[in-house]
Structures are given as structure tokens and as C-alpha cells.
Image (cartoon, rainbow, N blue to C red; front, side, top):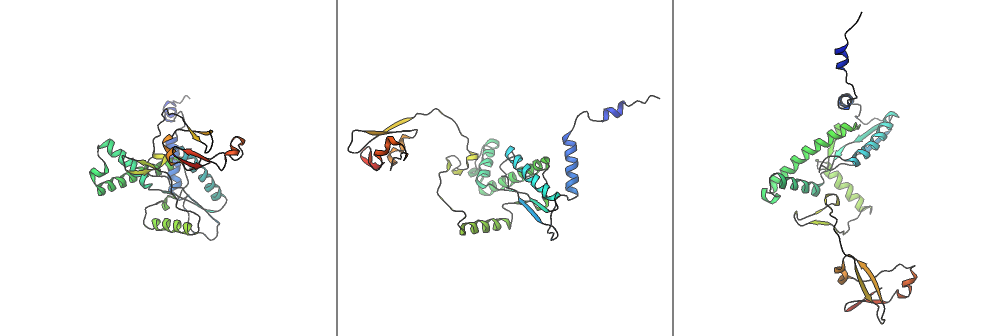
Length: 264
């Protein structure tokens, strides 16, 4: 007896289809609460707090790497019998998010935050957060991460902001963190400081300048190469390597900057 199996063969995919298989099983895991965690005195606790990705855009390879490592550790402890919690969240990334929303405004509507006003701009930022926050969660689920999504938090959630403030104040009072003065990337268009990650670096051919500092009471000089000769007028000292024999006899002497001398 010969059986026609044409339809049966055609109905089966000829290659692995991750979008069908992975979504099916992730929904099954999540619907059955396999990633959920609760206080359980009979088990040892194991918790990882997800370094919250910024809502400035989509996840990248760095997020995929750290999520993979955290997922491995969480699943391993879960299989070892721990009450294992991987706590997910997202960060507002205030200034960085402001910057990307402003860029989107300029591109789509050709307006600035000043044109639409404070309240309207804040509303646009929250809409951005909802859109890209959802994309980030969806991307994480596509990776198969075993977070307890019922506990997901946002750094500007009520209560969480107080917890963050308390943590930072405590660390500051214990001298574990400090406030300091640093150089920042100032955007003259947006009139705010920007993170290095939000700055577009452009390479340009420059010039190397050689400044000859005359040594006091001598016809000799010491030469310093720099790409920023205009900073010469703010010089207060010239440093040399303490083990460099070429300059050993100059340490402690003065060198001239136009009409005044500084220490070497």
C-alpha cells in the first residue's frame, strides 16, 4: 500500500525556527512562574540585582554578555536548591535620555524642548521611556533570561527613589563614595553636560607644538610637546620622570613661561 505523505512533509519546517520555538517555551516558563521568587526560610537565598540598562535605546552586545553571565549564575543556584532571585529593572539615565529625546524632537518635528515647553517635553520623555522600556524587556525575554518580571522596577518608581537616595547617603557617610570635580563634555547646543557614551567623537588632523621653557640662570631650556599650546599660560610646573638621568640636575630649578618662572 502506497501512502501520499506530501502534505505531511510540507507542513514540517525544513530548518530550525527560533522565533517559534523560543517564544513558545519562554511563554511556558513565565506562565508557570518558574522564574518567580519569594521568601522561603527552608532555602538559602541567592539574589542578583540587574545593573539597570538605560532607557536611552535598545540593548547592545554588552547587555547580552552581562545578562548571559547573570542568567547562568541564577539558573545554577536555582538548580542547586537556592531561592534564587534575579531582580530586573531599568534606569532613567536622566541627562542621556533628555539628549536622545531632544535629538528625536529635532529630527521629527524640528523643534527644541524650549519650543514645546517643560510639561510637554516631560510628557515626551515619559512616552520615550514607555516605548523603549518595553523594547528592552522584550529583547531580554528574547535572550531567554530568567528574571522575576513580577518584581521589575524603574529607578524613578515611588519608593525606589527613596531607597536609592538612602543607599547613596549611607555610602557617602561611610566614606565609600565621594563627590569630586571632573572635566565634563559640555554640549553648547543642548546646554548640558553629556556622558562620554552620548558624545560623537570626530577625529581631525592636529598639530604637535614644541614649547621651549628657558631654565633660570642658564642658556639651556627644556622642551615639552603638546597639542594644546594655549594652556601654557596656565602652567604652574613642569614634571620630569624622577629616574630620568637627563633631567636629574634640573629638579628643583625654575623654568620660564614668557615673563615669569615656574618650578621644575
